Image (cartoon, rainbow, N blue to C red; front, side, top):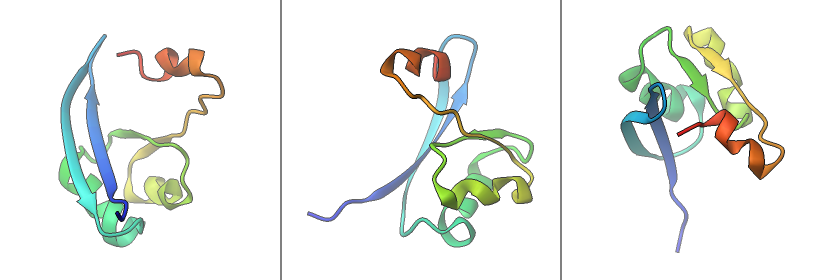
Length: 83
């Protein structure tokens, strides 16, 4: 069974997650796949949190702030995504 690439955009709220947008992508290209998804679903000045995949390194050029937190240990997951 082939794997699918899924992009997820979640609105952060004070102590919970807000609205979520999901999309199956055809690939991992910022120009062809991830970029159009983000442009369709985020405010231009939104901060994008990713796992640091090299594709996402071009996000600042699109006008978005890019935050790539490194979890390191499972105990830190509540610091990175508190909800």
